[in-house]
Length: 331
Image 1 (tube, rainbow, N blue to C red):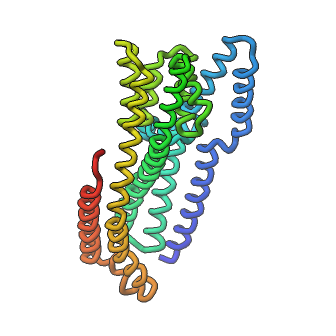
Image 2: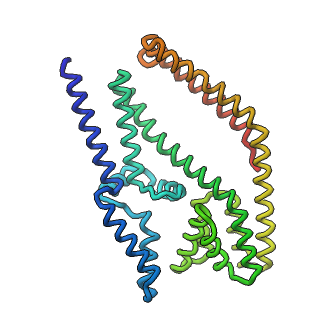
Image 3: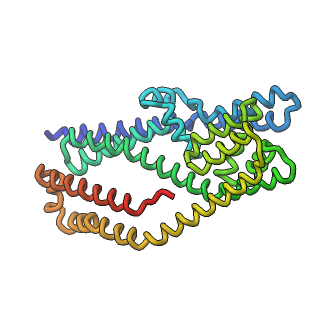
């Protein structure tokens, strides 16, 4: 029995060492200089090379860089992830250079740290600690990626009507659609400029405009952008005044944004009250842990208290879901 703390300490040290090593390899610490050099050389070739084939190969390599594994461990971690194509689409929608291997390594690290905390610090059983570690290791990265995607899509939606107006002005001045979209990629900041830059790069590599825009629609999964793509596709098939159609679409999108802001203002008071009421149980439990740890720790050791706590969390979750459904309107 006296060897248990020593064994736990050794296991903890070995786990921390492996975590740091995995992070260093997965995030490319050891070969970051070489990758940075290659990336700069590709940009120089793309910009200054007189040979079009060399510039095209450099541009294609730069576009593909975000999808390629960055290390051997990165490729190995990708094999542990179910549905890697769906995960790759979600990670690309964040607008950040996150690989599947980095995502998997982060989840494993979070799960391992959670198991250690619940097992060594809180003294929970091994099976329960592993279960909680798996839930946290899978759920927390998924939640963070979802928040990043939602934040980026929100920013894109706010800038998108202005981007459409720029395209309309370009069309009215006589520019083709491709050049008008290229102007958006130059004039707007991320995420609108970056996403339309991907479109122009793919068109230069030989893809059609519709195909490049639908690829972008997989990352920017909003009805507003899909309306835009469908409008361009219909116009190319049937003809018509594209500038006027896009102008009407921009006006509709702005009115939708105004209506969403009105709904948000009307429901803000109810949301604030819900946040306060929902946070009170956790605040009180934290105070109990600080004032009387022996009494509050029964929630982690006594099976009856654990069942009651889980039931309370479930019912709180149901209440939060119902309130969220009541104040979220489709516009």
